[in-house]
Image 1 (spheres, one colour):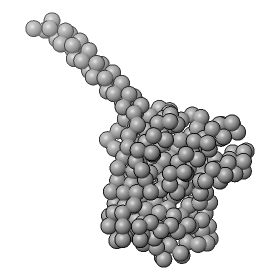
Image 2 (cartoon, one colour; image 1 turned 90 degrees about the vertical axis):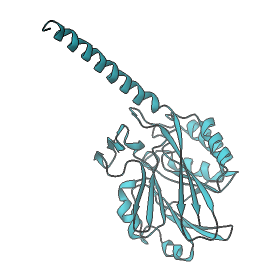
Image 3 (cartoon, one colour; image 1 turned 180 degrees about the horizontal axis):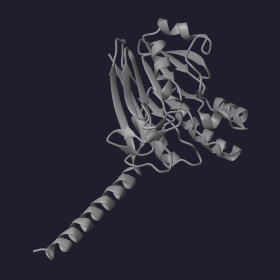
Image 4 (cartoon, helix red, strand yellow; image 1 turned 180 degrees about the vertical axis):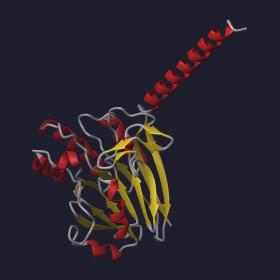
Length: 270
């Protein structure tokens, strides 16, 4: 009987190793897919509208092909598209920028397409050229601005914050105009400023930057810039008072684990 113990321990060790290897492989390969996350939010608005949110594309270090991103947007037929920072990577060349802008022009031809600057863009040496390229191709830079759009009797305020800015009338002088609208949507790169967004009582804040926390276990991200380990706001839906924040996990990033690339489809309905 005693001689069987080592054999039993060996079998247990082999099984545990197989389970561990399978778990690691599952975590890695599940992160290679693209997930379309659908959020339906209800509010007191006259009519329904939809938004596609893209974040942290990081071209040319993107892990989802440009063609795939374009097809998903075309198939969704949104009313608006929102890019919440880091369309390009900090390493992007002028040629990379031209390629991205040519493709984003196809999206801007479909519907109003907004973007805000992320940390990889804000410090880029060719930032001025990049913004000019996007503007020429019909994308709307919400650089600390508010723009109002009418759609099917709903008046929507789209607000944009440049990376790292707080939401206030000091940074967005037109901010009080959101009170004239049925619904307000904020594009901001950083989710860690959620409390600030709530104070200004925006209905919906769309953010990115965290890459989903890179590795995820039990719905908790491991690490996010500006939040450190086990970040409070790493991915998904957060609610406080009348403000909802969606944190998109992006379309790039190394070391992702149980954390697929993501495009958000958001439906705002009466």
